[in-house]
Image (cartoon, rainbow, N blue to C red; front, side, top):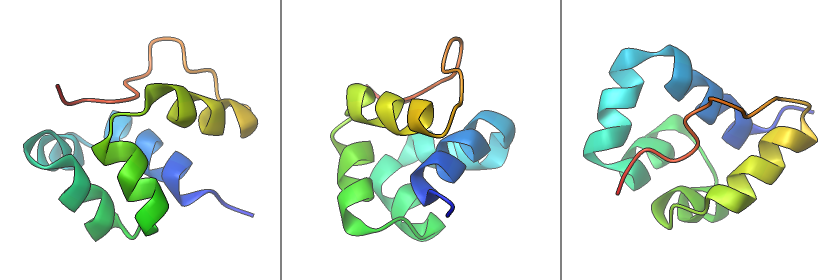
Length: 71
């Protein structure tokens, strides 16, 4: 089963256009990508720890990866 939040974070790291959209409005970008409300909330709240756990649970090495991109 695919994890849409993991897909979104990986796509942000690979797609400059999505990264720019995310930087402008993280919650809207995540919602437009099709993330469920609870994952949009993780993005909106900049919950790096929860996002990191999700990535690691899918066997992605998060070292050097941009997990949360807004201040």
